[in-house]
Length: 128
Image (tube, rainbow, N blue to C red; front, side):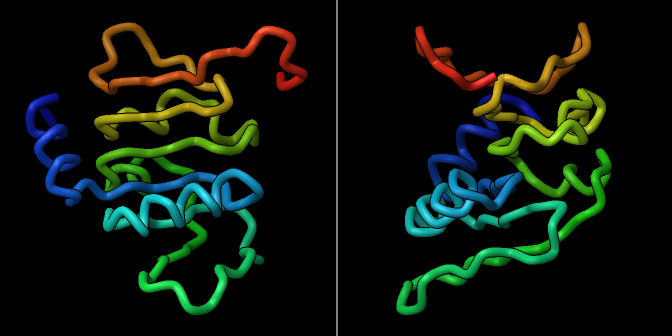
């Protein structure tokens, strides 16, 4: 997908966002995307998802998916909020237009057409 097409999807709130990892960072982040009216899916390897608070105006879809490039291909953007080693494999993101890596875990292959946005490391951070 071209950058212009992806930007159009984002501006129109039609970009499908997969949030990988539904822990302390991923679940609240998925809720923020849902509240902004993006189609969002919470993804995790663990089938025991935390529960979203009742009373929210949105429906947050959550699913456990296979860790494959074909499974990730259904999302216009993938936000990686987990440090699980399974998600470091660059081939997983080969069919995704945008990856936001909050853990600085992904290194794309040379020539990849995926746009990768990495978190800025904060000096003195204990996170690895």
